Amino acid sequence: MYFLIPIVHNRLGAVLRVLIIILDLQIRNNTNVTYQLHVRVTDSHLVGEWLTSEPQLQRYEVYEKKHAIVPAYWGGYVRYNVLHRKVLNRQGVIIDDEYVTENQAILMYEPLLTHNL
Image (tube, rainbow, N blue to C red; front, side, top):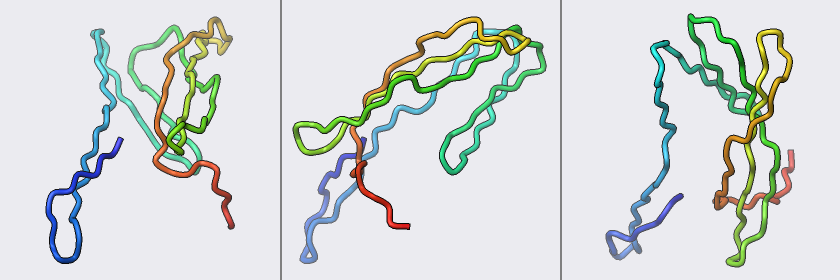
């Protein structure tokens, strides 16, 4: 979320300071196993994987189950989504589908603009 806070007024107008409030990714490892997070960005997705030297009994695939962009009363938009994860065994068979979290975010851009490529 961004807030514009005026800090100086001069003959050219107000100079603004941008205050950025972001909840960073915070990870806690409660095990005795060392993990490494690899993250990369594609043209359309943020892709990540956890690496470890210990064999794992399960693996997970996180995905967006529900998604909506909703007009808000002030003229902007709010993005909603629900994240789930598929739990797969060593053979790649889905053994569970678990709820992870829900997100709500105020969009800082016009989401319904058309692109002229």
